[in-house]
Length: 504
Image (spheres, helix red, strand yellow):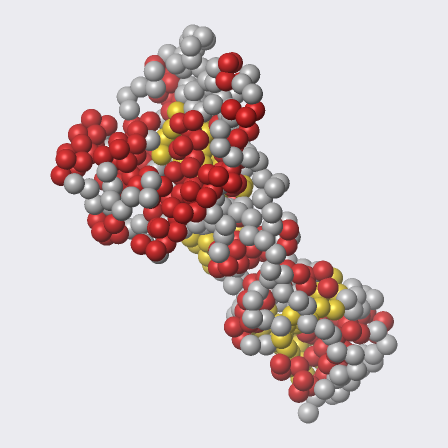
């Protein structure tokens, strides 16, 4: 019977569902048809496959060829099915052993010469092949990315002929060794390069230890952006699951994934002209946006009030859920979005409110209108609001040895605090649910009274109440304390800067 089956992987969000490529040869006028909801690039694969087969010195069957990509209701796109289609045709025409294909999965785009070209989304395919316990064959350029997945055997080829020689057991392909390197942090910006700003550095350490969102308020040139760029250098190293999820999102993005980025936390800095779709993702074929590309990393929004208010509002749900679902008429895709939000803003339109030089001439109405660009519900979801004041010139001229601790020293404390949270909670403090807060963030009666006074005076919501307790729990973890004490709670309350009536 002139029927052969090969296995491949489609792309749906960061998932990689199985696609069975069935090839049937029958009598009739020579033709080739592809069914199974193929998009334009898949329909065009018949011409690429024909050229690759002929230029690889194989015989292209002059029969009626029907190719079915199952399941039929799953959209198929891109050139990733070229290789399994070509192998299916060769197996159905008995130029390859059809029974051997069952133990493999194939992804790869073919050139007319038969060469294999790289593609996006190989990492999710490798994860799925591991779970299915099949061997994955990929283009040579995608080998390093696919080999990051533990437990899957990856074979890499540069040409269709190499794949066929392996299947015919003429010249077997060697398994690609697994990539296990952890990249050095030497290229990351160091915290000791920031002069002064000890309060802001402390806030940055607390935010890193508990995974808390952070808003920095201060005049231009005080180091807000500089501080934010130092956050990746003090965050804990990603574990295997976090690294794979972040790499999978990068793999399906337009820029793709590079193995040099392995285990490096993403740091995304979209411009304030970015649209809501750019932030959350979208398109007819949904692609991840900035919040997903920042998964397990940092999303830094500089000049926060300059973002369109409707754009900022799309952040509210992902900040709580850690996921974003993009729905279209024909399909739906879900992407992870467990990012740490860090934002910066000026205190007023001119930027110099409260500055010692008295340059600010903004009226109270102008200041209020400026801050109103950030909605209360979004501001309520940001754990910490920290003032970043102007740095005196004497500190700027101080010798470099007096700049303070470097990132490595701070990260040791951050990792120790995060380890305490993992043992106690199983997750970072910022991810605690309300019932977890009641269990792990208990305070004594005197501190409860203090917090009640702060809530009444600052007009805090129930969400802000819980976030203060989470931050206080992180401060206690940094101090190595089992229970939250008064100094920990007062420090956490002090990190609600915008809840006060004035920044003067």
